[in-house]
Length: 265
Image (cartoon, rainbow, N blue to C red):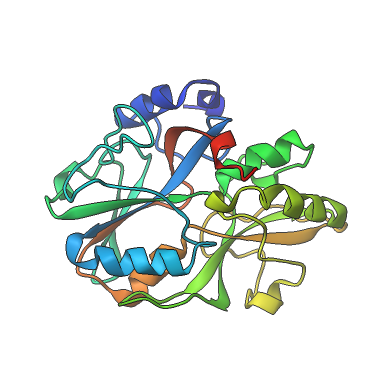
């Protein structure tokens, strides 16, 4: 299935994903609608993770949580959502180690699981494109490159991590414009956290991201880095809870929330 699915509604895309007809990344899908990162944890770890997210809102801006443990719908972000099947790809962790990557987590579901949805940088890409800025991962039809940095998040309970960032190369003037635009979207990571020298934030090789795909960086461009919702996956690996489920990097839940509702006026 090609990415012409981006021309359909969020509900139609979720149906396509639920039926197993699309399992790829969602960069560039559903222009105008919020995409969300996913973390699902047993209730015993949920409060610690909530505190970690609240302490690190750039990397972990929560846009929704499940009403009670065990429910699989998310009515505050969309109709007829089944969190077990409506993302293209999931990662299953045990003792902090990824043990499986699947397209449906129904067989893993438990009544004590709590779902967190976290804002995604894919949501502000629309505003950047509308301003005439190229988004290289979209123009090259790749997953956005993501890197683990040396920037420590604030710890909470069992959770601790260095921030993960996503990167989009831009001309310096465009990077300044991106800062202005993304400052209006604090619920989906907000303004970039760094641009320029990758080594300054602990990235050794810009052409070897830990997650996602490398993209072309032209001679006249600088890498621009945003806080990334994959940060919780590093925190989960460090905390090593006995069980956890996340999205696979770049494979998001597409919600019914308009991106415009995430903008700070």
